[in-house]
Amino acid sequence: MKLKLSTKTAVVLVVLVGVAILGAVGALIQAWHMRHTLHELVSTNVGEVLAASELDIALLKQSGLVASYLLDSGNERWLDALHDESPLFRANLESFRKTARHPNDRMIVAQIEKSFPAYEAMRDEVLARYRSGDPAGAKRLYLQDLDRLYRETAEQCDVIVRMNKASMDEVLAESRQETHRFAYLVSVIALLMLSLGTGLIWLLVTGVFRPLQRIAHEVRSLSPEGLTLAADSDRQDDLDFLVPHLRLLMAEATERRSSAGPDPGAGLHAEHLATLGKTVAQVAHEIRNRLVVLGGFAYLIERRPEDTEQTRDRAHTICEEVGRLENMLQQITEYSKPVELDLRGHCLNTLVKDVVAKLSPQVLAGIRLEVSLEPELPPALIDLERVEQVVINILRNAGEALGGSGTIRVSTRKEEGRAMVLVEDDGPGMPEEVQRRIFDPFFTTKKRGTGLGLSVCKQIVIEHRGAIHLKSGPGEGATFRIEFPLA
Image (tube, rainbow, N blue to C red; front, top):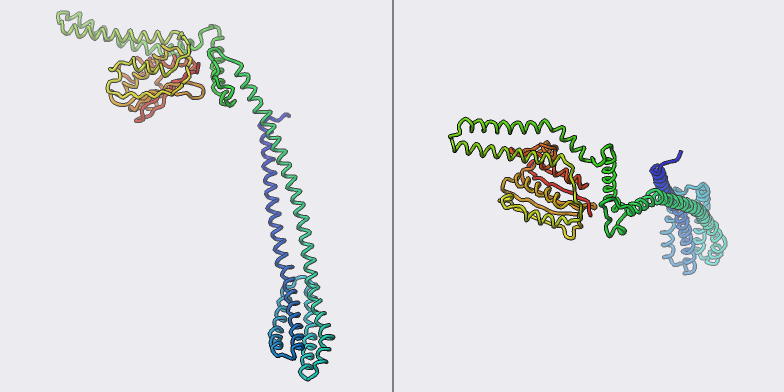
């Protein structure tokens, strides 16, 4: 069974992490073992070598002090020093006996404990002969018997030193071998990690990056109707380049698929007609209510035609209701028919300036209008007249929401290959249930609204292959973001 790229990558990553963990654990074990070995080496062998060396030095001092006494014509200060050194040798011997761990060391300690009393007895005899007036016999006894006993005892101390030195050399040799083995293991692990890392990079390059480059190259070579590539597209990162272009390609494919049905050219028009069919009852309800008002006022005029003032007021009301009916029917007609667009490259900055100039002071009376335009904004592919209609409608709604007091901010921006207009107000905002239905046909929160304004705006934006979004909340104002593809 052929493994997927994701499975291969996961396996390589798991093995790579496992090898890294194995190397780290091995390093910790080796470090602990080396520490243990050095601790044993210092606490055992080095300690015993030092103790044996101290015994040898103490014994040498005693022999030297006796020789100094004989050569210095029996100067008593040498005997005083000898008297101080004798207990030190026994103390060192007792300490060494307690610390000796190796059986051979303990055996040699026992031999020293047996030979040292003979050495002391011979030393005392040499001193006694010198004091009795036989310096020549004392020196002869020192050079022959006492020196022999000294050398035998000192040789036993040297044996301890040599044994422990040999043991230390053995431990160090073993440690060097283990270090070489560990270095070999680390080298193998490093090579394995290098191989796995190289394999992972190869998988990513062959399975991800190269296909991504091919897709980017193919997308650059394709130009859907109405889509032109940016001048610096060749210098863009492949992912940064693909995101907006794939979005436009998908929109193009969706439009063509929808237009390939039994009725070519229907497209989104069929969807709008379906939505319109669901709201026929509501339209009939609105028309019937206004006809009832018209009929009632016409009946009153018919009954009392002589009342000129009342007739004038009622006729004015009839004219207003007829105007609202005409406006509603016009919006229904506009909403139901296909949107024909004259798409060209226009700068949204210029559009916003024109819309702000066209708005009458009465529309935004008492409202502060702030305009912030992004410099060097690339042109968008839009129908200028239709988009002006959308922006004007949203600005009017924002002004009505503020009720004559507040701030409206209009800005432009480029983001992810799209140009957009943002309209923000600091009004009372909208609850969530209103936000969900704000773009539904015939839904309105106004007393005299038709509920088709924002629906028509959304229809126009969608026909541009753009998007319109609302962000709001109670007490947080409202923000409309209108996006269009770049030219």
